[in-house]
Amino acid sequence: MRYLVSVIDDKSNPGSTDRQPAISAFNERLIAEGYWVFAGGLADTDAATVVDNRGEQAVFSDGPFVESKEYLAGVWVWEAPDLDVALKLAAEASKVCDRKIEVRPFL
Amino acid sequence: MSDVEQAITRAHHDEWARVVAALTRRFGDLDIAEEAAAEAFATAVERWRADGLPPNPGAWLTTTANRKAIDRIRRENKRDDKHKEALMLHVDDPPEPLGAIDDDRLRLIFTCCHPALAVEARVALTLRMVGGLTVPEIARAFLVRGTTMEQRITRAKAKIKAAGIPYRMPSADDLPARVSGVLAVLFLVFNEGYLASGPGTDPVRHDLTTEAIRLTRLIRALLPRDGEVAGLLALMLLIEARRPARVSAGGELVPLAEQDRAAWDTELIAEGHRLVRERLAAAAAGVAPGRYQILAAINAVHTSARDIRDTDWSQVLALYDQLVRLDPSPIIALNRAVAVAELDGPEVALAVVDRLEEALAGYHAYHAARADLLRRLGRSRQSRAAYDRAIELAGNTGETAYLTRRRDQLR
Image (cartoon, rainbow over all chains, first blue to last red; front, side):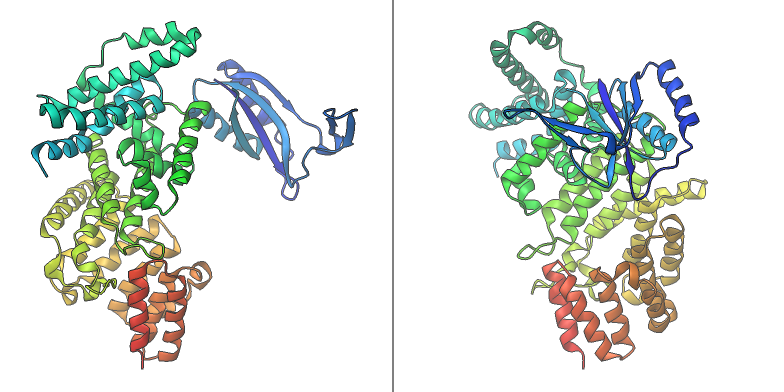
């Protein structure tokens, strides 16, 4: 199964900023063990643009689609045999990133 | 009840989880397993009444349920030919031999109590898939509408499927945490029966306590070496044993100290004590007991006393001290204070209880305990205020009635 693994940060209580070496090491392991499909950190939500072209013309608006204290700071895509495996990795990922993690299956 | 009706009830108790579990493994789908099992039992009711009992009801139910599941898959395949071949491959496999099926029930339990499901979904799913209660029965038990409960169960099954919650035994290093998750679900069911919440309900819901005990016995049979499973079963039995004395004729809850001990169920007590002795022997051999085992031991001390005055309170306190080290929650500290009151007097206990105010101000038992200690100290005005607050917060009709009478007896 394929899972979207989101790293959730909190504007009022952000996770520590020195995690990159640990995350890189964790990524190496994900690759070696065959779970890694994709990973990427995201720029600040201020850099987002929402596009709505359902009407007559495209409307662009500055900022994320929802303003919230908690926001998506990065994503992984993992390939794992089942949720137990994904949750175990996610528990490690949360420690490694010092942030909350959401695990969501692809259809 | 006729012999056939009794056989159907017994088969439902003995075979439901087995049939659902075997079908789930064979077809990889909780929905198909649940529906086919329900159809097989409905067919059994008709056929057994008309034709009499089959020689092996369990095998009859498994075969019938398998056939129902295959029928359904064939029906669905007519609509969706793409999957036909893949599914039919499974379907033509011979049924699993009976020996392997016990593990399937454990798999089913672990799936239903998976930590990725909301707690109320775990409870509902376990009662439906493992306990075989109908959706309206579960809805009634938790005082929600049938449609709400149906949605809760449907959503849980959909998550299991979509998120890939596996149908297998947890790994060895996950097992203790997962077993404790299962026990928490069963204890929740038991507690809802033991101290039912909500206005207009019976103070004790015998159906829920009985079901929780039945399922815990099943887990005990499947995991006979797990100390906490034995501990929880003993705890439930020793609490259930007091049920006949726990509600007065007027529907009031009767606290332990005022119960008619002659009305306690001696058979359940004997069984509970046997389990506690088994765990004490394990503890003597160096296996540290978990919280259910300690709680069971506390209840064993209470149920060993023929009269409240014979209670070995120093033993109770020693066990609570052990429990506090394991679980420093304020609720445990509150229960410990009851033993302190018996040993060191209400004044010492009140000081202990008052320290818990911040954590427990919204908990009715905190105010009830304070009210009782204040009453024993002759501080009627403060006691009355504490009873008022406890009555306001208590959700159980029998408990409210008891607290109200106590308050009104204050001079």
